[in-house]
Image (cartoon, rainbow, N blue to C red; front, side, top):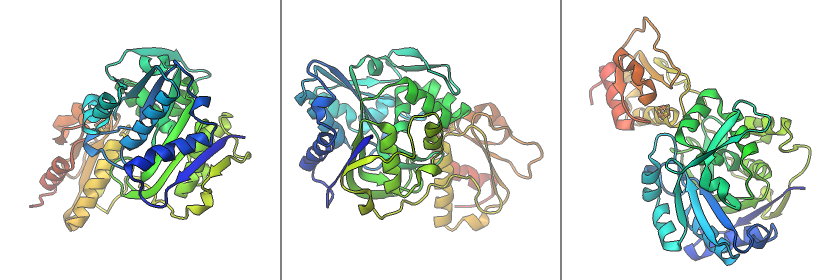
Length: 384
Ligand code: SF4
């Protein structure tokens, strides 16, 4: 039976308590010595999706990363690396700097690996679903031990992002974009079956609900969840968030592939799942808004989708939605601008640069809210 450990602090943990929480969660799985042996090299994979939005609930809490570095060194690791590639729309080196992970690595003597600059290795996917070969950070694959450090968040396409989805950060940006084109569920399952991970420690000190993975409100759970079985961890964590595993396509498809078995209980040690009663707000998964707003989307990733939700939210708060008429937004690498639209469309993001001359183009990856709002005001003749 797979084991998942849960450690909860009654209050927001102080800096010096986080190490104890992470250690306790791993001790309940047999201790760090059962995972890291003396003289081994370890690669840690946090979630640093975008440096500009760094902070609790968006990126992995630095204190969790720091605790893992310390634990690995105490176990005798000869080298600890932090390996990460930020979201498609963010320069990784910038995200690592703004998030404070770069400084942490320098202060704690860990090597920092920018996946977008690191050498990659091309690995064959066993019984591929959609990708025959995946390029993965060489530093991550070369490590003796691989440890995943995701954040508990909702996600507009997968409903949640936990352990399995976080692995996407070890592939270079070109492949990330491809995942969104060909199907993110099957893509992350192919990745999971190609890249072995020894331990997952989920940061749920501050989680995110609603408009995840970057724009949602924070949820303070003050919790660390750990497991050597990433699928078991995702099953337990999603239940804590209030999702049934059957709601999550990647868990269902993973179960069909034999990666987890829903009929088998997961052994939970520590805080019981039943002590979490808060149900996370669901992420908005569609792009249907008020009457008069049409989003033509094909191949758009969560950043542009999240930006559209966030801009519409801003317009509602500013009581401007009533003035929107015939707004068309074209987004995503495969979206085409339909003929005969009744208004000039807003063409959104670098994925749509080939259609820039067919409407009011907003550059960016994703474009920021201010630029989007300005374009919407322009095409809908709205004054500030
Ligand atoms: S432009 Fe938007 S959809 Fe395209 S890669 Fe950037 S964020 Fe994703």
